[in-house]
Length: 345
Image (cartoon, rainbow, N blue to C red):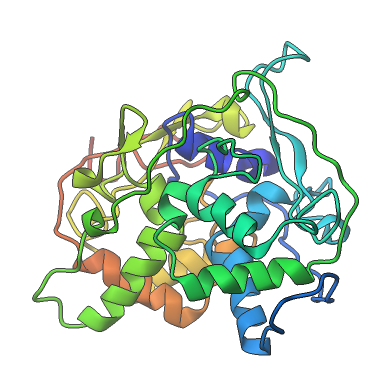
């Protein structure tokens, strides 16, 4: 049940799937350990910059989901926060030489990022470029992160410098994840949909656009793909699928779990208010009180549960400001129920 977060990025970016709605998993996400400076910085960061970086890493960019080992109950292991995960995903469990995707140690340790410059770290998550010149596998959503504000990128680096070092040398991933494919280009920021010109809370919607489209997972997971790239002309329209077994879910879940249409159409979230979106992100519940489905990392048991009410509200304004787009999708992911859309499909 709790492995769902460990496959989120792979499913969204590599296997062509996307995040959907339905019951949230068990397990409780623990707060990251208190920051303790373990590496010298060229300029001492302010408390505000460190807090911004901690917040982005933990609750918006969702770095911990992929880079932090978990305890048996599915919660993050606080002693190994951001220290990397061996075989984060195993696409071929029957072969010990094939199928494992490993995630890197991001702590301030020589086996992590301690010996990397600020520029090298930023090049990795903004451009997908390793210090040795090789490309990161595009399961790392650098194509979206490349639109991040420089101040936010700097805040992330500053926070990572304070994460207590954990000795954890991560080996190379296995085929088919090695060698990685050619680097992918940054998603053009201009192609991320703008709020409707007549939307009354347009300033809030513009802030939500940055959160949902550039540094969060909403656009990545709720946009269909064409030839491995986001089909931005259908941004936020949903319809991507996860296989139940990939998420480690029991048989009473549908075989396929689909991402939701997040546009304000009758087949999407037209009946949602901003407060309903806030509730979905922070409490993991749809407008009718039902739980959201794996692998949506929302609610108190997911990292999005820690997003601020103001940011969640801005995201809600942005989604409701999008042009309505019809896309009937099977979205009812409940144990013991078929995957049928609440709109009758």
